[in-house]
Amino acid sequence: MKSRRAITLILLLMLNAFAGTAQNITDKKLAGERTAVRTFTFRATYIQPMSGTQTYLSGVDYTVDVTADSVVCYLPYRGVAYTAPMDLREGGIKFTSRDFSYSTSKRRNGREEITIEPKDNQNVRRLSFSIAPGGSAFLSVTLSRAQPVSFSGEIE
Image 1 (cartoon, one colour):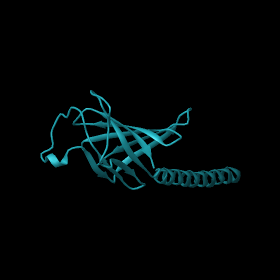
Image 2 (tube, helix red, strand yellow):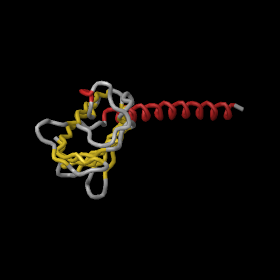
Image 3 (cartoon, one colour):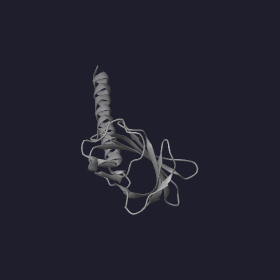
Image 4 (cartoon, one colour):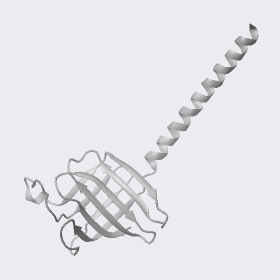
């Protein structure tokens, strides 16, 4: 009888220790995911609408700045829009997001794939970056109120 109680007590203590360790591992993993956001600036040099020709972007500095706590996007738009903005000065893809999901993966050829999904923007659904080892990059923007558009440029 005493041996059963001792075994039960030992098992309970072990389970409690493992549960605490599992919680610590989960907390560390989540903290790592939050800080794993790569800080970079994408500078667009070409725009490729879904239906149309590729065009060189000159005169204005079109960028997407990604930091651990925000995404700031200032890009032009060419393509078919399903709804127009009320203020024509608000055209293009311009927003600042502080609530977004971020995922990354590496490809065999050395390219890095980064997907950002802003949760606080009604028009932009997804920013998909494909970054080559040398720093050249391709960006595909998925929109809810317009056709998708792509950009090519450099990562700084």
